[in-house]
Image 1: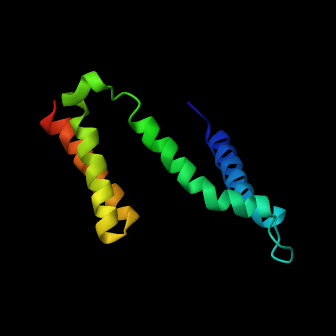
Image 2: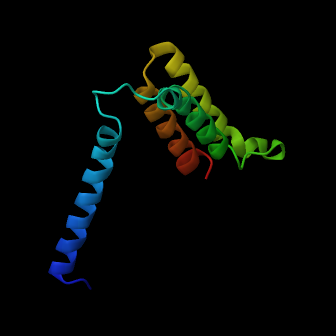
Image 3: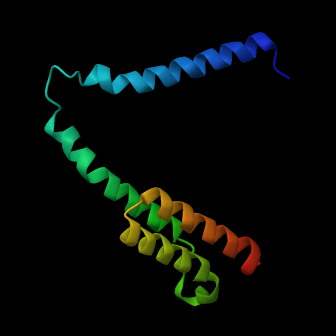
Length: 110
């Protein structure tokens, strides 16, 4: 078990690390200077690349021979895509797809 002073030191270190990581972009790229073109480029392309990597990661265990077991993933993806195209709300689409997936995996496809 940890002593209370150790816990306080650990919380202080975490707080300082969080503060540093939040302040670092403002220190590295002050408003008085233009943002480097490479950083602007990364800000434009990384969200799509990260989304593609997440989709690949989520579907890595789905193989052609496992079709009945892949149904929760396919249905959840269809709900996320459909809701996003219909409502243009990422949070709603992701929340609904996650909820549907968890219900299918925990209740329907036990």
